Length: 169
Image (tube, rainbow, N blue to C red; front, side, top):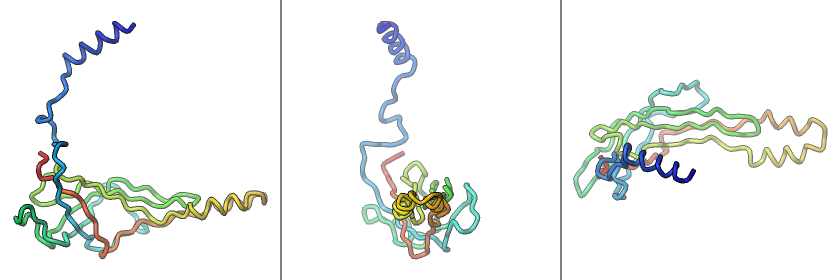
């Protein structure tokens, strides 16, 4: 049986060789990055109906430099896509929104580590102790199931930081 597995591994290694580091999209040997700070152009909250795939608009809050050379100017508009929406649930679980695919002029998407997660207020920390304290009274502990978590919101004065890796392809 072990010989059979060894033969399969040998054949797969010959048919599907591992790519060299030069052929990969990312240069994981390089850890040089430049932070890009931005803020949303108008307040955002999960209280309003949202759809995955919608675009949100941000603006860069500070000039971005690499080696004293300006690559992005303050006020440049950036679009981001709502990748995932997780709605709040019972027992205090909050809303969560994942933003991805930041479109920055002059920068390839493969050069950005660009996921931003915003979570609402987590009420589980006080709901669960309350639930267990009320459990000895019949059916009263179950009423805490009706408590929902908070809405995720991004305000215009919140600063979001994503990272640009200029040495990646």
